[in-house]
Image 1 (spheres, rainbow, N blue to C red):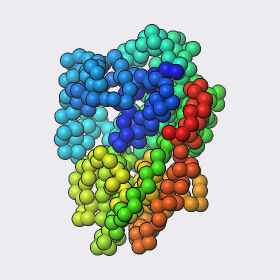
Image 2 (cartoon, rainbow, N blue to C red):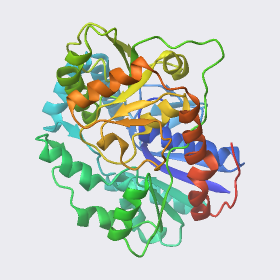
Image 3 (tube, one colour):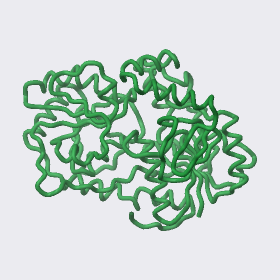
Image 4 (tube, rainbow, N blue to C red):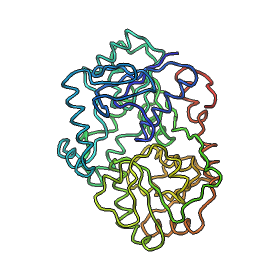
Length: 403
């Protein structure tokens, strides 16, 4: 079978949760022998030339040569270069400049332009796939075209965006788009035949907004990666994985300001993996910026415990599955744990306030849990077949087995 995956950013693991899930879906389909084409709207590329090997890429603003993706016009190339230059700046400065440009502290998403949507519709009409997968409500507008009526479509929701919008606004942050209501989100979701939510709570909310649609869950699958024999944890070592998204930075600031003072001087250290560390100006002693790492396994196998101090957000915190599939337990706020499968053996230690979070962390560091319960939780609840069973049904691919 042949599928088209419409997105505004090339799916890839290790950068952000939604990109990792999109990558996993494409890899899963390809592993079962199906063809997937990435239909890239806009031109969110890492630079003037981006090497991409997962799947063929087409789009209104890009061109390809072999495994490389380029901006299709000089004007687009200038924009890509400008954004690459912005990313090269110190993360805190880049964040301030983005805030000035968008007049917002965070951007939840930008809707696909009418021009790009029309290009996508024309491509699908000329190259009819068995189904179109659409990345979030921000790409859903193209499904309103009459030419898309007979095309099977699945919207990969990733989140319930009006709830995240409301939570961030209530915390005092400026959010783009400035308005995102339940009614608006329901209208965009309802353009698809099938809607893949990332966790059961989201699925219930989406079904209430779109009672006539097929709504199911398709969470990030967890490929088990147990610690190798002979690899020892570093006593007192904490780890956090995260992009420079506002919920991550807000949670880390709370952790460093309100929780870290209880941990300082107790033999505790913290590794920050991803762009989150670079986006924070000042870090106390014992907190290390590792940046992006090519392989998470060595970092997670040496850590004694993970943390998830998020205070705002929705969807499913995929980083906690990364921790669990590597055998790590996580001290987490209740917000961080929303949507995870209930299990008495779940590898999560819940703490709602700063003092409780610190006490829970120290207790767990004094007696680090063995990896097997975390591995078993990930294996049982988030195996590939379990995660993508309903998605396979919606796409008409039937039983696709384990990968």
